[in-house]
Image (tube, rainbow, N blue to C red; front, side):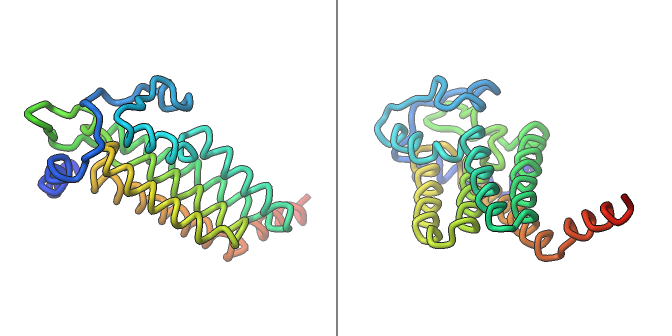
Length: 204
C-alpha cells in the first residue's frame, strides 16, 4: 500500500466514482471513532444515508453485535464459536489500528486539494467491522445470510460512492475480515479450545 502501486486506481475513484462525497475533511479523531455519530456529517444526502447504513460497523456497535452473536452461539452449545468470533473481532480491529498508524499512502487529490483523510485510511475499518458483523450474525442466525449479504454489499458500495474510502481501502478491510473470519471458523473446527479446556480440567 505504501509503495503507491495502486494509487492510480484510487485517484481515478476520487475523480470519477465518489458522486456523493462531502467536502474534504481531516481524518476522524480517536474519540469520534469510538462515540457513534459524534460530529458526523450528514450533508450531502448520500453521506447522511451512508452514516446510517454503516452504523452497525461503528466500533462500539459492531463489538456489541458480535457479542450478541456470540451469546446466541453460546446458548446453542457452541461456546468455542462464541469465543472465536469475539477474538476474531478483537484481533482484526487491533491489526487495523496498527496498519492505520504505520502505513501512509501517497497523497490523493480532489480539485487540487490534498485529501488528508485518505493518507492513513487503509484498511477500511468500516468495511472490516461491517463484514465481521455480517459474518458473525450469519453464523448465529443462518436464515439472515441473504439480507446480511445484501446489507454488506450496500455498505461497500456506499462507502465508495460517498467518498468514505477508496477501492484499495475497501479491499483491504474485506481481506482482513475474511482472514479473521476464516481463522475463527478454523479454530472452532479444530477443537483446539475444547482440547485445551479438557487438558486444564484433567490437570486440575
